[in-house]
Amino acid sequence: MDLSQYGPWAFIAGGSEGVGASFARLLAASGVNLVIAARKPEPIAALAAGLRGEFGVEVRELAINLCAPDMLEQVQQATHDIEIGMLICNAGAENSLTPFLERKPGRAEMLIALNVTAPTQLTYHFGTGMRERGRGGIIIVGSNSCHTGAPRQVVYSAAKAYQFNFAEGLWAELRPHNVHVLGLILGLTNTPNLARTGYKPDPAAGLIMAEPKDVAQQGLDQLGHEPIHCIGGWTDRWRQLRGLPRGEAMAMIG
Ligand SMILES: NC(=O)c1ccc[n+]([C@@H]2O[C@H](COP(=O)([O-])OP(=O)(O)OC[C@H]3O[C@@H](n4cnc5c(N)ncnc54)[C@H](OP(=O)(O)O)[C@@H]3O)[C@@H](O)[C@H]2O)c1
Image 1: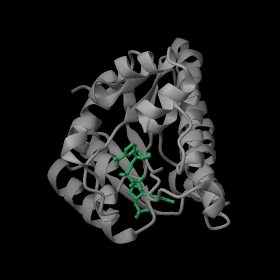
Image 2: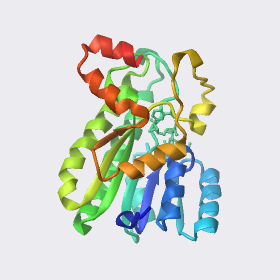
Image 3: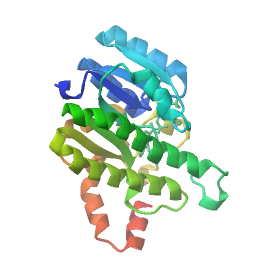
């Protein structure tokens, strides 16, 4: 895969495991250097060492909470001397099914910071350089929860809806500048984070669990084409959902 349009460095927000780590591996295999950002330093260090050894790329390790108020300053410090040609905003999962008013104070703000504020700030920051250089790529990792409001995931579904429109609008604005944008919409995906929640899909529900490496591969393959790509055939279902009365659409997603 020729990813030179997206080099020489990629920044992956939430790059230490799952889909983010799969993106890291595919980019490293194509010779793209990496900044891997996540909270826990140990998984970042282990992944970085493996990628340096296997592919000979440079990897910067950035242990950071993307919800921190000084997130962008920390990112600037870590990247001011390198050219970021690819931004992947992956971190953003919601691990609890809880009604809005029963959540702990601050939980909603944290989800908004992770899914709305951080991708917005990172895109503004790195997208400016990409537009000036006339090349680059931005992938925002979303969720099928974006298609309707979702009881017990009220803020998550609203934040993911923001990401959907954000990616779509940016796709149109940056396309004339040869900066490719993709909203990559995931369904159930076999990530370590999902495994930690203890979730086991009900076989009777017929849900298919995607693998992170396939999701990341599809993301890179689809970048530069349509603004939105839904994993697992959901692109057709999403179009179908848009035509339904909202109550029916919510029941289908639920
Ligand atoms: N897994 C699914 O079934 C599924 C379904 C639909 C959509 N998605 C979407 O796919 C993306 C990835 O999901 P995921 O299941 O892999 O879990 P995730 O927690 O969103 O992503 C895991 C990565 O993000 C990092 N991370 C999480 N919170 C962070 C924070 N506050 N600051 C910095 N880094 C943070 C994690 O490392 P640390 O823990 O060390 O910080 C790890 O590297 C999310 O946007 C999610 O909404 C997932």
